[in-house]
Image 1 (cartoon, rainbow, N blue to C red):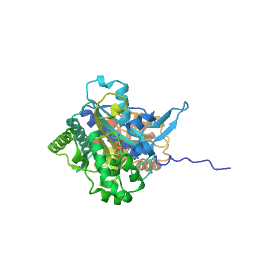
Image 2: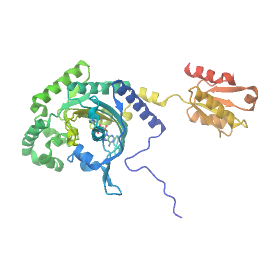
Image 3: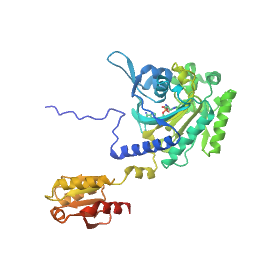
Image 4: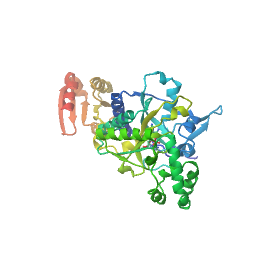
Length: 424
Ligand code: HAM
């Protein structure tokens, strides 16, 4: 008979086991706390959207829409897509629920799973988590500044230090048209030195070539004209205010002329933070302004700005201080020893939980030794033991693994005693 098939996660997708999931929860709790301080409120949009939302929003020429979407037809033949990002869905929700009638700007944040069919590697998955925030309805640069300051406060709250923001302006559509022409003029004589992708982009969207990872092309681009040199006055003034105010807040930023971002909706301010630990090419987060997106989706000309953090990558490089907090306090293990009724362990563990102390009840310890070994392997420092003698005397034995001590405590004083010892 053939062996039964054992299943594995789908390629590029992974399980987050208890330790890891705890770190995710810790990061998410910090995001909720910090973003709420800035007046942002949480939204949750569906995982599946109309495919055209991303084709129109993120852009047909983008890598995401061109190569990376999980797209399928439902039973009625509608083309649906697992969301590859969160900004287009939030813009859709803004229009669908007439959020333009709310006081502007509308500030929201979100977190959850996103899907891109990419080649899996370190820090790159086909299902990954993002934590994002969007400010919709304010064209001015002060919203850019406040959003970036909030982002850095969040990262500081997780224990990150010395992070530098890569910053650029991709200008307004007119600036980009002007720049595309200039870049094309610059690159045309070097056409033969470009790879197939970049040659194609030279005709369609030369700006994308700035994103290239090919060393030869990067060298060539070192002498290319800069987009910032052709910004029109409004975009240039906007960028100047952003830089000036970030300096006032002591935010460390580096102007990165090659930063254009891979999604088509960006205008003016764009930014990324990369971490050395992940390799220079991998951003922990990215974002920017998208003043044309809502119009592109059939709405009025409402501007927006936001960011999304790759949570998997963030957790990967989380400072140790945050990891420790994510672990939390180990639970007290309650063991009914020998033939003592299991119900006593059940009751005692409930009493501890009622006092906000985490407790695991051990019903199948076998012997006292096996029970203690199991509690140790679970990482418990404190063990409550109840045998026939303790039941008769109305007591509980408390063992402290760390100090190798043991004491007998009255049953009705037990919870308070444990609490005092844990918080000591
Ligand atoms: P994005 O740069 O495409 O921007 O993605 C943001 C972050 O998501 C990246 O910096 C990265 O950390 C993470 N990420 C992307 N793909 C993967 C992957 N395959 N595996 C693991 N992590 C990944 C956006 O998505 C925009 N919606 C950000 C934004 C919000 N712009 C304005 N508002």
